Image 1 (cartoon, rainbow, N blue to C red):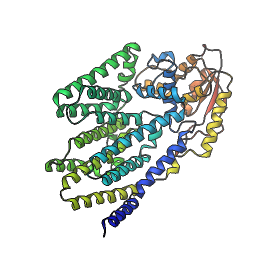
Image 2: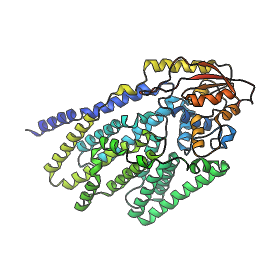
Image 3: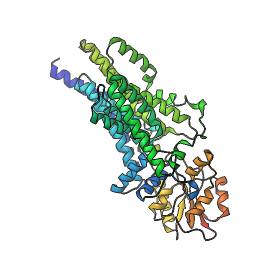
Image 4: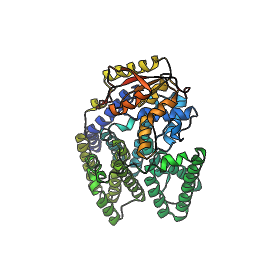
Length: 496
């Protein structure tokens, strides 16, 4: 067969084989588009994160004595700071928070794709692997409960360490690169605490590759982290330390630590054989320093995800870094093998085609029903009705589990977040949520997602006005409790 016809046939075969990858990419793009503008929570914590960003945007403190009426989430602040900055430019809303998360996932996918194109022995292999890698990330979406586009820190907490890993080169780091990498590593910790595992590995890798610049990177990163910790602790009169480090009474469910293994293996079965592949490549002298670095980053993601999962109250969102990194790292190791085999060109090409065929088969098995993640027309109607009810209240109001809805609908008093109080009580703080509602000065309390036991204490200070005659569902999960509206029984303090 003439070379032109052979290349044409190969291109047609490649397009056919990559059809499952195109399905995943098209499906997740459609889901992002359909979910982006939904004006209420797609997951219970979205509004709470938006409200934290709102407080930053309006110069309100986060890490304070909760007896003042606000109990923050025990997270570092960087995601909220970035979210507030985006909101300052585009307007803070659910869609801007989701757009930030989508941008981080897309950015991480692009970085992985560029890495594969650079490391592959030919352009078509690199492009094919990059498409497969992006599709594999998309295929992990349902296994995270649809977390990629939620207003949560997980997408940013995935992108920032990937950026840091790019900055940590295999050899000696220049002064400029060391400072940039240290900033990215410190940011990794202050987006989410589990970022410390990425930081630990990348610093160790840098020291092993070049002792002098690696130690400088370690010292600079530690200094940046400690200076930030000291500054935040002093600025908050010690409350930053309290919320981040004195929450140790949250239970670790040790017997659940292995639960994530099943979804990890379902998404990337080759993870079981990754240590053997690394050892085999090393024995043949084909293992690149780049692959060592990224395999360690994947290992840090696995450790962080499994530890976070073992925490009482964790959810599928903690799997996000693993599903973003697993296939790209596996394909990077394949690139090492192909480079090692390249003197035997036909054999190397056969391996490349076999990988594409196997990947396409695996992606075909990972197809899912996207409609379970889409807001339904009923959900849109209920969301609009809910906003109208909150906006029409003749006075300040607190929305206990959807606090951003209150400020979005023109209510500007402090929003005591129920989950923040639950976290504080679980950590041993003597908190009273109803007292927090009283201190807010709100005339109304709108409840969405509290059970009867949590409703009862409200009757000590508030009267029940109405039950909501519609449900506030999230995709695939109905809220188990009906919403209510309460009115303060007696005059309280001025709204705060």
